[in-house]
Image (cartoon, rainbow, N blue to C red; front, side, top):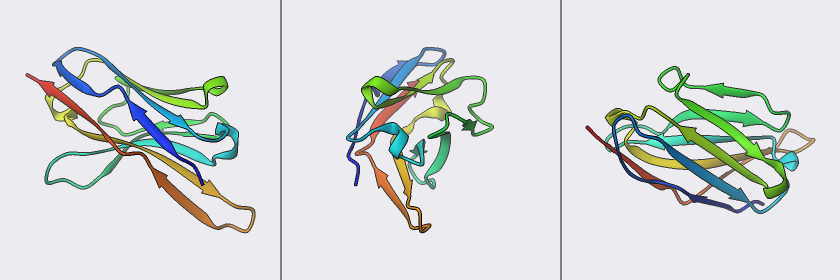
Length: 120
């Protein structure tokens, strides 16, 4: 298992920046992949950015060039740096960890979520 603790959300104006943090209870290298998802009111949860244990990253088209996912291995923490925020980025952001065992079993773990609100 893994526990995820998120922080860093808040209220900002359009064009400003925020950094979200997700601290894990185990080594990042033991986690197959981590990601940041978001869910806006009335919408489905969507993947915003992901990073594998090997360090490969991926982004949703809507955030590419504005958001950066990175990790601080010594702190077992994954971050989401968000710049040039837009009102449509407003959502609850969730940290996710996926662990795949050698026999192919996958388990997903979620943080509690952190609210990001971008005013126009």
